Length: 85
Image (cartoon, rainbow, N blue to C red; front, side, top):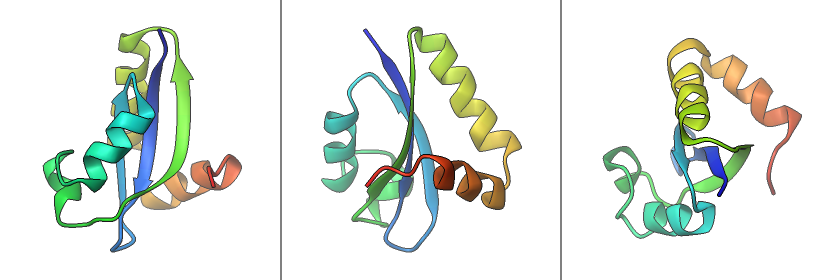
């Protein structure tokens, strides 16, 4: 099983970072208003970045790192390096 860290671009231009083991299901949940509280009022959300990991704790650690240590500018640079269309 793979785990993913992902970034969404919300309709207001903000970025949301999370982790999951099913990207399609999680993105659908965000856009249905059943995802994170943050994204409920910022729909639709577009998937703009992903990273895959073999272990859940690796994905959780990376999510924490992105959320708590990267600036918005650094997140945009990260997205620019491997943007998902």
